[in-house]
Length: 454
Image 1 (cartoon, rainbow, N blue to C red):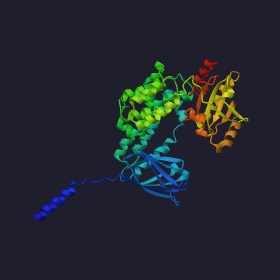
Image 2: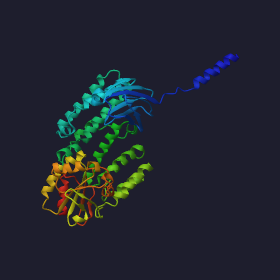
Image 3: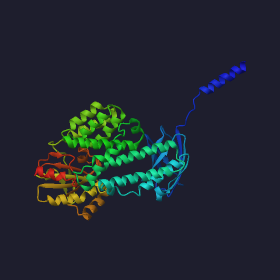
Image 4: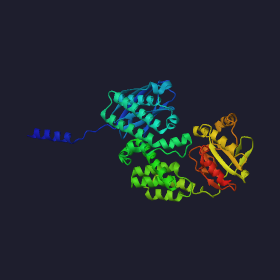
């Protein structure tokens, strides 16, 4: 009886112990022709840098909190990777043919080889500008074809788990709807037809879609991008129909769909990082965010931006500059008193900046006999000084070509709170701010702004 009692106690002890599931991923691989001494895995609030040895091998144990999509970056190249807790993931690649050479082995081989194939398939799509410049019927036909090609690839991929397939079907849906959501805005930008409106029928296929799924927002970057696109479109419509500030319309739209919670704050905060402007709606925008915020760290960052922007509202004295002129000496804002000043903050490495140059040249030519000073302020680093001078010469850039003295940290740049370029600013004849985030040369609204001031 005593032995039986001990046996029952032992069984009881073992039966009460819960199975401990691993929270790690063993990730290892080999990189030929490596151009980097490290690989970085990031995503889902996780980041780990793994050392690549001189022989090209790497291995590490990654303690991840959740299953899902991550990013693997080696040098300048990156690729998506899917990780689950307890998995052993192997990888081989050739850095000279990064995407084409990716081969996964181990527990998640089928899923990750599918993702590698999916990325290669994306490179066969029409270029972004060609797709979004298509007429509406042609665009819908093209994005439907793109979506079908990914769906077919997933269906033909053998060995992929049911759980992954279920998630990937959702990812493809999010990406497809996102393409449709963005069509109107991108078409306007690429064709410069700002009056274009997509037909309401383009949105019919996802009228019943859930744009308030907190779980999806937390677990899918594709869903996050989709919500930003969707609420951005809804806000633009609300703004154009009522002349309401776009940032205020966006925050109100999000506020009405998400009474509280992480999703609401993340959408608002991510928008305000670049969407909060120094205009007459600034106070209302800031107060709406402040009163609905539940994240003290984000509120602190938005408050800092607000304090900078509150000094840049129309009518206030503009921050000044006094920088090296390409033609010799220095030029200051005060040297341009009596002229309307149109400042273009740019850099030689900035693709969107360079795409504005042809429109800027036309704008300068059309207003050459007016009292407008066109100032192009480069924020290139000192090491790229010669590159700046060469580009000004080769592209025959007109106007007043200046170079800031400390790239992004230059006082004029920080005083204007500039976080992205190109950035255009209009200053009046007395040195006061007209618009601290003015239309680009390619935007027809810039001519309306000039004509109202002349």
